[in-house]
Amino acid sequence: MTLTTALAPRDPWSVVPSLGNLDAYIRSVQAIPMLAPDEEQSLARRLRDQQDLQAASRLVLSHLRLVVSISRQYMGYGLPQGDLIQEGNVGLMKAVKRFDPDQGVRLVSYAMHWIKAEIHEYILKNWRMVKVATTKAQRKLFFNLRSLKHQFKGEADAVNVGRACLSEHDIQRMATELNVRPEDVIEMETRMAGGDVALEAPTDDDGDGPVAPLAYLADEIHEPTRVIEAHRRDWLASDGIALALDQLDARSRRIVEERWLQVNDDGSGGMTLHDLAAEYGVSAERIRQIEVAAMKKMRKALTEVAEA
Image (cartoon, rainbow, N blue to C red):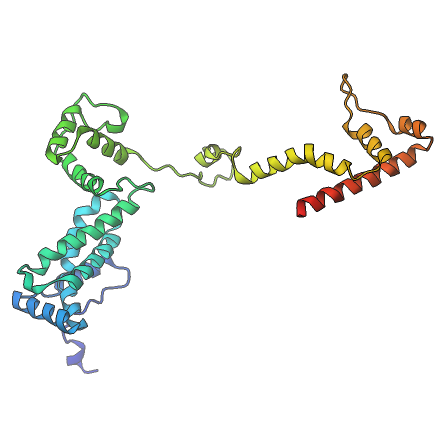
């Protein structure tokens, strides 16, 4: 490489900023030359008629500074400017693709709508975990209300917590200015004033941290798995036991009922092994063996029903 080549000026149409350096990117796009009206018309027609991607690239690059300028208007939402620029660039590319040079307007005027639309969409999706604006009217109110608030001074007679930074007078003026109902202004201000709350508390090694909403918002009573388990327990305690007892002979059934299902008025159980042994004329060990075999047969019957 010769010295002349090394010192040759960089192509103004190339954007090669330092990786991850937003300031370098902004300096690069500011150095890209603007297009004259006839150049813009020529490039737009080449894109429309010939699908010339090089023409599309020139149109996009020459308007990147516009995206940077618009992104600065939305820095107050706590979102990174790099992300705002990225979304705005998406809107710019959409505008270039749809631009008609025969409409008699400059691309800069046409592209502003698309750039702002993409940035608005990004802000509404990421400014709050829960969406603050879902309809077109709410979106318009969201952005207009926020900019208008900076023009009004709050008065001493502030109303409830949801609109603590707005007085009744402010609300009426904003409603009139934005052509909406005062109730709409109050609702949107309440949404904007509300902060996000993490459902899970941050990890705390000593276990003394705050209780997260996830711990008390969960409705375990109606959790599907618990409902199924409860239904199964109820069935086993009634129909299931009756079905399993029907699989036993009379002696085995009586032994199980006396040993496990009988409850006297004083809270005591039924007959003991020795009581049953005396009644049937066998040893207590034999009664225990019959009981074990009967319980095993009942468990098998219940298992077969559950797997059916």
